Length: 330
Ligand SMILES: C[S@@+](CC[C@H](N)C(=O)[O-])C[C@H]1O[C@@H](n2cnc3c(N)ncnc32)[C@H](O)[C@@H]1O
Image (cartoon, rainbow, N blue to C red; front, side, top):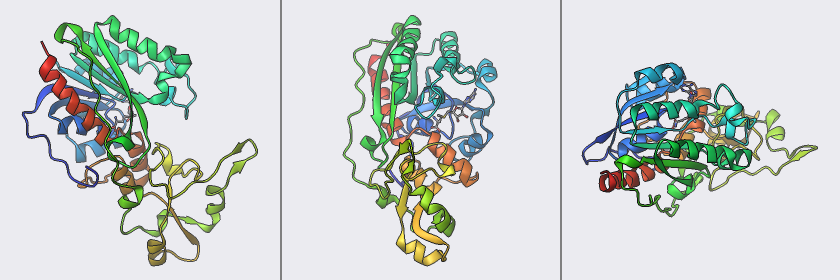
């Protein structure tokens, strides 16, 4: 799938699907490719909506879900990577106590109760399973079960589904018991990785992506007193792309590559031959198609790709889910 344009499944498009917290549509694309019919999508970030409209579908409503939930149409399936900062080790770990973002799971609960949504697929950081000694995750599953859902969950690493990026994410798949026979849901099997980060690097890269001589010491540094870390660059499997990678963290945290060819071609004395990834390389590491167009600044593009669901993972999951629904829907 990497660096290619995927065509939407030739089988009949079906199952009315609503996408929440859609971002730039990584989750949505995988589901569309597998044959699901995305009828309504939502995000409150205007730049994410611009990218979604330019690349995925015009069908995205830009606004806060706490208001837009009233406009959600009848549907069969709901997908959503709800905001992960409250549960991520990179955030403050406030969980459900983060009033702004930690309670959005309960918005989902209200929506699926109202619509009797048949299938719910949720995505979040792996750490949501450990947050508050496992209580947060237990509560999420308990809340779904209390509505009559039979739940399955699994951690996916994007590197096991065709892209050279280490990215562990937890997925919950929930089937409303009254509509389904519910034998165990088999999550998709891992695939052998046949590409490296180096295979995906752009041919032509401008000077602005290369480290300046001024900053290279900090980026490649080992940190300070209490926080000593080894810089690692040129990894064949990239570190997890993050929403804040535009800021350029140390090489222990963000991805940097050596690029002698473009350095010689485009850079002057003030730079070194090490650079950060371009937004286009981040696109490839997240499995987005090659006809993707960037309609926002580099800064927004880094944030969007860092926030996204890896398309390959979503597609692998959605294919299995489609088959399961076909067989088990009563
Ligand atoms: C982790 S990202 C999801 C990325 C998406 N799954 C993708 O593949 O691109 C979470 C998204 O939730 C959106 N969001 C957060 N709070 C929201 C709210 N109250 N209403 C609507 N969208 C919200 C953010 O703007 C962000 O794009």
